[in-house]
Image 1 (tube, rainbow, N blue to C red):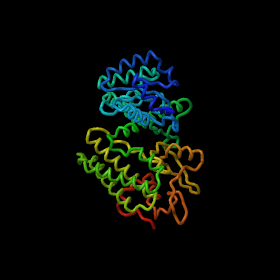
Image 2: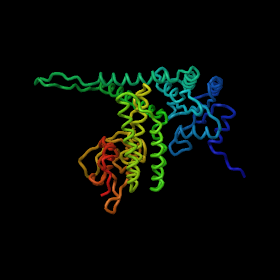
Image 3: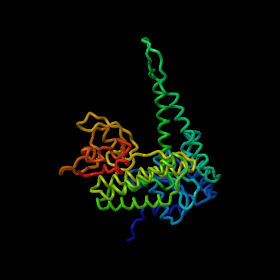
Image 4: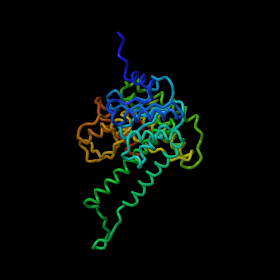
Length: 403
């Protein structure tokens, strides 16, 4: 008896017959007539293009857009552009193999286009194809991202409190009140969200220099020996990147390049002396900082803005990115820390539950790494670089020790 085909195989088979696949749950969002019109437009695309609209649910059939596109690319066996949802049906994402048509930038240009706010899914997908066909995806993406940055900076400037005179001759800062205060907060929230989304996208399009986030999804499940092997591989890969990198012109770019080289040396030094998972996690943190610096140096050399750093999860860097910023006070301490955390750890901390912390072996027992004596743990002292910004220099001067 033949086995049932996998979801990826079923979708790939459908795409061979028709370039648009829509899960039944989204059928009403993109009716059959709209699909036919879009399919006709896809024939004008400069590369084979497929639109695949299915639910993306963590722990479900498809965890994220990258997984979905990668599986379908493999199943179809040829290159092209794959258009999917991103985090939700409100955002599109473009993945491309074998070409350079700015498929991802086109998606974000559509997502950020205020004129498409509230537009139908068909209208957004049509605009996406327009950008690719016309070859203007990168230009429009840059215009949109520059506008977001201008709006954000203008808001910061206009919303700064302006001091007034108090009765006693001192200065008083005005407080927003009532509905006006709520409106100001709402505008600020939208602008901040859009800017954070923009900086995240800039990291996603980092010319292959940034440390792939799949490294952390693998590292978090690895044994110590597997983690050591993975860390070693990543050190070698970063060294090869640096060997092929030219020294960029400009003071800031040169400073960033020097930081990348220092981070590589610190990572290699840490790997050589690593005695456990906390040290091996530190290797990946140092590589992440180094690759960020290298990508920013190259961006500046090419006339583009720096790639904003994306701190890893404070509680356990092996969780990967820490997009949530929280104020957190360790149990039994009066010190309140402002840290970045992954969504699961941030949720646990806010609910006054214990996050999934990286443990360190100290005096015969396991303790959260940040509870180790700072005099004997550079990771505890710096929070893997979140509590201090001198992690790399400290490693290079020999602060990694195991007393």
